Amino acid sequence: MIVYERTSWLAMVFRLHGSALPRVWPRMLATTLISIAFTLLQRYPTFHLSLTVTPFLITGLPLGIILGFRNASSYERFWEGRKLWGGLVNGCRSFVRQLHGFVQAGASVQEPASGEAQERVAVFQKEVAYRLVAFAIALRMHLRREHGYDELRPFLSPRELEELPHEASPPAAILHRIGLDLRDAGAAGWLHSRHAPLLETTLVQLTDVVGGCERIKNTPTPISYIIFIHRAVAAYALLLPFGLVDTIHELTPVVVFFISYAFFSLDAIGDELDDPFRGTENGLPLATIARSIEIYARRRLGESDLPKPLTAKSGVVH
Image (cartoon, rainbow, N blue to C red; front, side, top):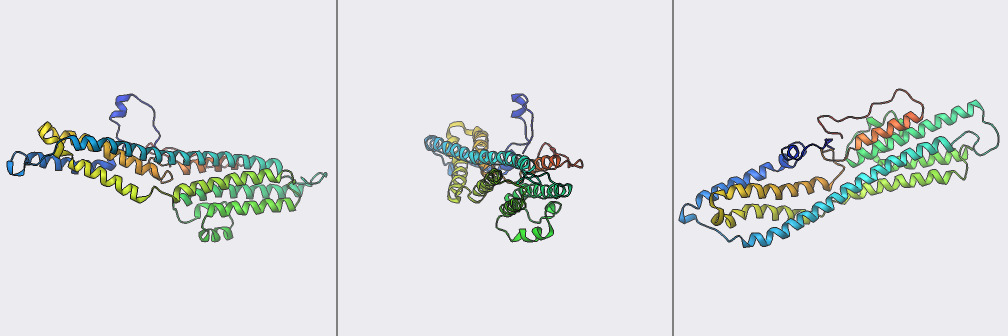
């Protein structure tokens, strides 16, 4: 995601970083060059071809509405992804708090716990908190189709790391393992029966986040709709000179340039927003959010050697 400061209107007009122009300029260049060639050919009666502007007025408005609707639906996917990851942060924080507040030595008996029992619970809390950190990182990797789990090595056992590549949903598998940890804590008398449902509820919320993210990732906009929009925009931009040349003559390429910029940019923005989890400049900062969860969980464990928050590089956080 691009980090920027709101500057003057004029600065935003001339800003290149973050705009769709780097992605659409080849298309704009092609349509503009074609319109220049077409305009020059109109000087020769043999090659004179033209249409009235009416067909383009009739089709331009519906095409603009379709592009606007497509971008609105794509932004809805983007915003839903951001809300899910916001819920992920809240859920992880709640789970860490519940883990330290409810999982205690002697939680199910009215006797003071020994020092050894408290140490065992502390080790258990650290293992579960580390699995929670691994869950956040694994979800980021899962959504971005990243392979290799060396990044999870500090947080999971070697056996768990070996099993993850065989899981259809590694983050869901880690949550399942945390659920088994809570079962073991209850059997050991570290988790009272009235507190267990609270932690289970938080795990269910985290599972819902995984499912919501997978729904967005695995259900893209139907390809027939995307193909239609690409074809319609391309056809409109290529045929536009036929409707303008008899009206504005030599200025036809200039008008085609600006209209093609508007339509191609809207098309490209819709494509980028359609998958909010991609590691592009305008994608959601999943790595940054996962790092913040790691820092929070490890700070609650009392660790001092914490990783630094991820900062923007060249104005971009990932």
